Image 1: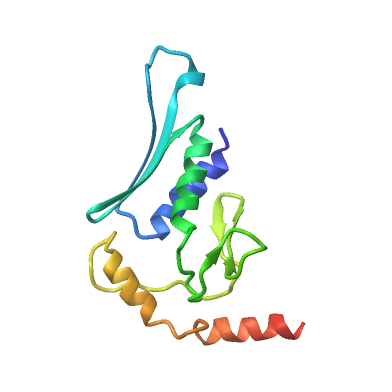
Image 2: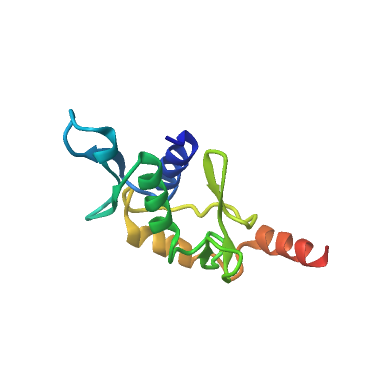
Length: 145
């Protein structure tokens, strides 16, 4: 098991505003380890995001992280990208944490309870296009280098 991947997934789930996180396996407790099917679940208000039928907890955690990041919007307001060949803010695993490629400040969510996707969307809508002033300045510095 890659502890970094599992810890990074749990951290990402929390940063994404989930109300809960679970990782476990389905199968016979006394059966061979190779036959266990691992899953990871992020719980939001009224919704569960699941990655299941994996051969290891590492694969389940990676699957859930990919589901969370695919189609997501970064705090800089760009789409999240998991590949250098795709447009958007490039996210990557750095140690025990998924990190964005931008320097934008985290988005503060006020109102709503933890896991409230509508409140998260409303907070992100308040961020100016291209990110806040610090993010725009950092992007300008990168372009001029």
